[in-house]
Length: 73
Image 1 (spheres, rainbow, N blue to C red):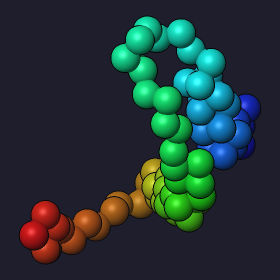
Image 2 (cartoon, rainbow, N blue to C red):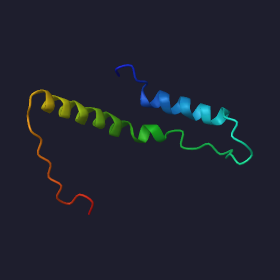
Image 3 (cartoon, rainbow, N blue to C red):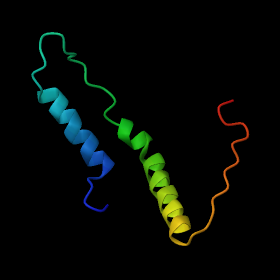
């Protein structure tokens, strides 16, 4: 991952920091969505693959055609 932490490890480390943080009397005592990161693991993998495709297109000097029909509808 080129020196980056896996999304799951990063997510759970951040959750732990949230639990341990002293942020005052108004903080929530409810910690949820412990499996949220797994809902997006496919999206994260897909994002990496798309970035690799764009990098390969750029490296070879190819052009990218984007059809935005229906986008935002």
